[in-house]
Structure formats: C-alpha cells, structure tokens
Length: 213
Image (cartoon, rainbow, N blue to C red):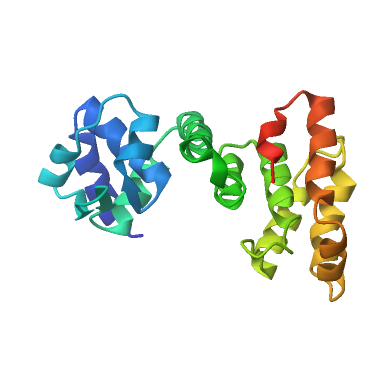
C-alpha cells in the first residue's frame, strides 16, 4: 500500500488508548470479521464502541451473536503488521487454543484453522501435525481436503527442522495424497497421519488431544 496511506492509518491507531489498541490488535489477529467470544479470549478488556466511534470497525451483525468487521481491509493490515512479532505470535497461539476449547466436539473440523494460527505463531511442528491429522480423515463425509490444503501441508513439512522426528513422512504424505491413487490409500488407512503425529508428540511430550480426529 502507499506509504502515505499506511502512515495515515497508523497515526489513527496510535491515537488510541492502550485498551482500544489492544482490542484492535487482537481483532486483527482473528481476521477481517470477528466475534466477541474469541476477542474476549484474547484480551481482558475491550472497547468496541470506541473503535466504532473512530470508524476503525463496524458492527455487521447484532443477533444472535454480535459480530464486527474492520471498516476497511487496509486498517486490519496495518493493525496486524504494526504489532511486535512476539506479541502477535502469542495472540495466534491463544486464539488457536480458544477455537479448540470453544467447541471441543468440532476440534477435528476446525483443525485446518487451528493449524493456520499455530503456523502464524511459529509453532510449526504442531501445526503440521494438526494439518496432517485433519487430512488423514479425508474419506469421512464431513471432511473435504482439497489439493490446496495438501500443498500447504507439504510446504509446512518442508519447513520442519532437519532433525525433527518424522520429518520425512510429514513431507512425503501430502505429496502422496496429491497423486491419483492417494485417495484410495487414505480411505484404506484414514488414521495414518494422526498416528504418526501421535507418535511424534509422545516422543516430544506434546499433548495428544490436539491430534484427536
């Protein structure tokens, strides 16, 4: 975006008080649209009315659950990119946990979204495990994993440290699923991905509940 426009938006954000700025930053991590439930999971105090007054956000749904959206996508971009990386990563990590805890029964359906936030948090190994666990149940009717998702999983596996356990299988599996006969292999062994991730998680001491599919 033009530097002058970015500077103008940043100046508007800088004039906010600390609570309003924290609210806006948390909302930017959630996305262009956000609900009060996830926002409350990221920040203790929110001042949505103030953000609406200065036309940084708008309320786009009132019932049954209020929902808000950034007044313009560029506002969200500036609010997101102006945060310290460490602070932003912490918000992504908390958001991933909040999405899972909000509806534990749908954790498998939200696996791709949770993985996206974990990747943004820099928690790449667990992100890859989640993504692969999700793609390991592609034969079930409520799961539909496309080529784009599999390519994303492949790219994530390539970014794993060279000494990471199961790195080779995590790189190979999504590529295998992208081939013509892979869907039959997935149907024959739908839990192979989650089993591999569970074994890796056990060795590294990570929580197995993230791998439930």
